[in-house]
Amino acid sequence: MTNNLYVYNTLTREKERFEPLNPPFVGLYACGPTVYGDAHLGHARQAITFDVLYRYLRHLGYKVRYVRNITDVGHLENDADEGEDKILKKARIESLEPMEVVQHYMNRYHENMQELNLLQPSIEPRASGHIIEQQELIRKILDAGYAYEVNGSVYFDVIRYNETNHYGKLSGRKIEDLLSNTRTLDGQSEKRNALDFALWKKADPAHIMRWSSPWSEGYPGWHLECSAMSTKYLGMQFDIHGGGMDLLFPHHECEIAQNMAGYGQPSVKYWMHNNMITINGQKMGRSLGNFITLDQFFSGDHDLIDRIYPPMAIKFFILQAHYRSPLDFSNDALQGSEKGLLRLLKATGEIDSLQPGPTSSIPVNDLISSCDKAMEDDMNTPVLIAHLFDGVKWINGLSEGRHTISKEDLVKLKSLYHNYVYDVLGLTKSEAPDPGKGITGDLVEMILQLRSDAKVNRDFETADRIRDSLTSLGITIKDKKEGADWEIN
Ligand code: ZN
Image (cartoon, rainbow, N blue to C red; front, side, top):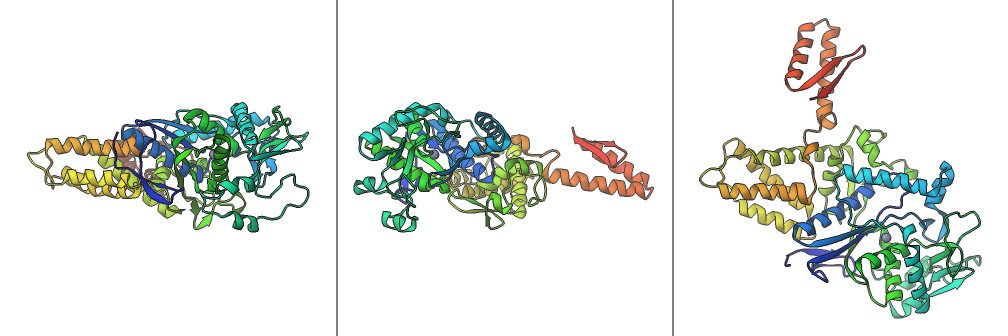
């Protein structure tokens, strides 16, 4: 298996040639959601980034095992191993079983990911289903001397680990800085050092998600699940670990430490991280009122959004930025993306009806190599899309008879667009005309308003002409007492 793919490795801070440990197999692990709330744009960006990577590696011919976990236990409200478990808190507020909360939001997450046309991972392990594996890893870390037990809880000894390893190497932090930036322990804490993190926590009497262990009835620390489950399904060493930049520290840093301490070797060859999304220049946050869920985008039900945005428009907007660049949401930007997407999908569909001529007046091979190079350069989807748009001009020229294309080039052009637009980027045809949503819907509503104005002015001739014209376009109008209903046939 050969390729020219280069990926940016967060660990080495360099673009590196992608060479799998055991070709043609590739192990890909990406951190999944903690299922206690609806998925938002940030979840979408992370899932889309690693879906495109998964699809692209398969397109290159690799056999990829893609593992994306579900966090359903142990993720506490803050990183200092304090606060309530996020799922338990939601369950308490809603008077539900914790696993009801998990099931509900996991189902919602899956629905959203399907709406975005993402492939399902090969394995989707849940933390609560891997308590034994996590306990085994704790035992190994304890045996190696990198953890200690206090009152039934087990903590990772960061200072001890850092004597022979570099805690902070992934996120570029130094232990001295971390120590001086961390508040000192208040005497209540069981930890030897504020930087230490929980591997196992003894459950309070009120904490109902609990399992027995050699140390206490309790539950695992959040970082542990990814070390234990990636090792179980991808082996002690695997190719790619992905996640959002917000997981770099402490989550992934702790994961590296756990693997080194427990298994004596680094687990991951390439660490890849996608950047965050801001909303009108602001960080997203529940308290800031700018926390827009995917369902709110799809239904138009949020003060900050002008109208309904179909899932493919959200996806295309995300793909028009490089995954390592910051991305700012605004209505204008998203509407621009939606228009671009329609243009791209329309042109892709039109290739099927093009007729070949004796020669080509357009350099199809150049376009193919430009597109390939863009993806080989650390999955540069915005550059890929820009090249595909260059080709859209040609496709339009071919439709209008301003260009010609040979039979051989037409086959190549068709497979180029089908491969990249449908298979690698995972954009779907079905959303192309966007019936009833987005710009088409806005236009129909506008025309119906003109018709109802005509009726108010007793201009029934115009009103009927508008209805007949819409009918001939395949849009059925049903008059009601107030306004009119419509649907695209
Ligand atoms: Zn993780």
